[in-house]
Every structure is written in C-alpha cells, then in structure tokens.
Amino acid sequence: MEAEIVSFLWKDGIRFAFENGGPTATMEYAIALADAVGLDRAGICVDTGHAALGDLGPAKAIRMAGYRLITTHIQDNLGERDDHMPPGDGRIDWDDVVAALNEVGYDGCFQLELTDQPPDPTRRPVIREELRRAQKQALSLASRLARSGVPVHRFSVPPYIP
Image 1: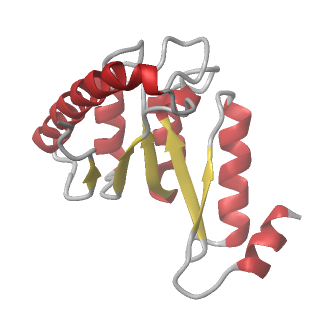
Image 2: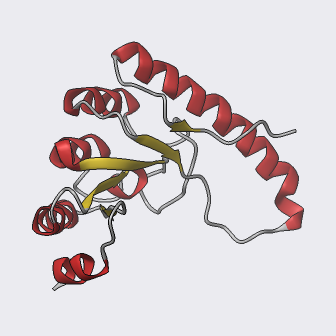
C-alpha cells in the first residue's frame, strides 16, 4: 500500500527517502518499500541516532541499505532516546560508521541533525556553544571520512556561529 502511495505521489526528479528506526525490522521494511517503489523514485535515509536505539545499529543500517542509501541524518545519542547530539558526544562507534560508508561506496549528502527541542531564549548561550562544538566535531568527522576515501563534497555543516 505505501509503495503504491509513493508511486502515485511521485513526480519526475523527486526521490523519496525511507528512514530507519531502531529495530532491524524497520530497516527491512524501508528496504522493501524502496525496492517496491524503485530506486529511480525512492531510496534509504540512514539516521544514525535512530539506528543506535535498537538492535539495528548505525553501521549495520548503512551496510543493509547499501546501494539504496541516498541520504543521511548524522547524529549521536546515549542509547536511550533520540538526543540529536553532535557526532562524538554519545555512544555511536563512528569508526564503524565511517568503515560502513566506505564499504557501500556512499557519496551522498551528510545532514547533521542536531536538535528537535522547541526554541528557548534562556538556552541561547548553551545552544550557541553546542553548535560551535557540533560544527568542530562534524568537520572532524568529514575529515575522517575523506581520509578513508568517502567523498565529502556534500557534507552539510552549520555555518559559523558567532
């Protein structure tokens, strides 16, 4: 049913990306949907933070997606909730993530996904510092990816935060 809906909504030049959850079953389902719709119309978005919340794991999600991987949501967490932390602030094994991206030959976009908290003016100084740290850590991750052979020409990093 979902594949038929996506096919109905599809327009030339637009691709859908099905995003994983934490359980391996969510990735299996996303892959089945992408395959049913067709890779010209859909692929997979691996959310590293979501994958770290179940039995899936980020590196396994990337390897499962393989050639279907068309975009990413790069974030970290402590393994209990979707924290949207900068890479390196949580428990994700980024060396394994880099290796998996290299194995599948990924050359798509790396979207840094940081927070989904509502705006709070009292947190502005803290958020500014978090964004500075995230920018530094994301650039470090981009450098590691580049050294391992993964193209990083489409690594989306927040602009400089004053």
